[in-house]
Image (cartoon, rainbow, N blue to C red; front, side):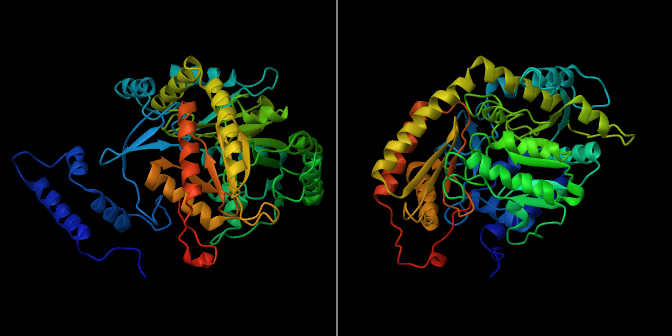
Length: 487
C-alpha cells in the first residue's frame, strides 16, 4: 500500500495553493507571496501532504504511527507545536544549551547581517573558535589542529581519511551497533547501518568487535573492560598485514542503547591498536561538550588520549557546525599535496554560533548542571525501577541516560512493544518527548538540552511511573501486531 495520500483533501488543497502561488508570481499588484506568508497559510495536514509528495519515504517522521508533531518554536528544554502545545524535550541534544537560546540567536543574526563566506579568507571567528576548542582538551594531549566541517558524518568521514593518510592502511576496527554517519565511508564503518535491513553488509577491510555491553553482553563482571578489549586486540591481529588504520568508537554509544565502555576498556584497546600501527578515534558527536557532567569530553572518563576526536551535533546549538581535532603529526601526514577545502565548514556565521554556545555553556554552568541533574535523574529512576519490574537497567552519566525495558530480569527478554507504547504515551498523555534506541528497540534514551533541570527530571519520572502503572500492552498479542514508534 502506498504511503502517499490520495490526491484529495489536503493534497488537493496543496495543488490549488501551488497553482495560486504560480499565478501570483505573474501578477502585478503586490507581487508574489513571501515564504513567511506561504508557511503561515499551510496547516499541519497540508505540510504532511507536501512532505509525502516531495521527500523520500527513507526520511522518517517521528511518531508517524500515532500523530506526527509539527514543531514551530522552541525555548530552553521546551518545544511547541502549531497549536501552542508545550512539550518537554528529553531527546534533542542538538540545541545543546537550549532551544533558541537568545545569546546564540543574536550571535548568528549579527554575523549573518555582516558577512558569510568561505574559509579561504581570514576571519577572526574561525581562528578564535579553533583556539577555544583546542583549549578544552587535556593539557599535553597534542589535540590542537582543527578541521571545521558541517556535520558529524562529515567529521567521521574526514577522520577516516586522516587515518588512511597517516597509516597507509585501510583496515578499520569498529564496534558492533556503532553509528558514525550517513556518507558512503561512514556507512561502511557503522554496523548499526551495514547490518540493518537495506545495508550492504560488512566490508572485507572492516573488522567488527562486540559492543562492550555489561548488561546483556557476554562479559558482565569486573574484568569486562579487559575481556571486551581482547576482541579488539584479536581484530588487529586479523587485519591484513597485522596493521590497522583506525579504531573508532563512540565514547558513549547512543543508538547502541546508551552503552558506556567499562573501566579499562579504552586503555587496553588503544594499546592494541597503536601496537598494530593504527590511530584511535573518539567519536564525541553525541556526548561531547560536557554532557557527561564530570568530564568535558566523554573519552576522559576512561583516562585515555585519542589521536583524533570528532564532534558535531551540539557544537553550533542547531547550526550546522562540526569538527575534527587531531595532532600535528596526523594533520601533517594528511597534507600530501591534495587540498582539503570545505565550502561551508567553519563559515563565520556557524563559527559565531559555536563561540556563543561555548560562552553560554561556561557562563551558565551547564556542565555542572549536567552532573548534578544527571545524578538526581538516575537516582530517581533507580527508585522507580524498584517498583516497576519492566525496568531492567538504568545507565549513563550526566545528561546521557538510558532506561532499558525487559519482560524478565533473569532472561532479559526485551520489552520492545512495551517500550514503543511507553514512548508514544509519554508524548500523547504527558507531552514529554523521548527516543527509542538499542539493538532491540527497548531502551528509552535521554539526552536533553543541558539546561534540563531537576524539576524537569522529576516531571519525567512521575509521568513514566503513571504510564508504567497503566501499561496497556497485552503480551499475548503477537509483537508483529503492535505498532512501532519511530523517534
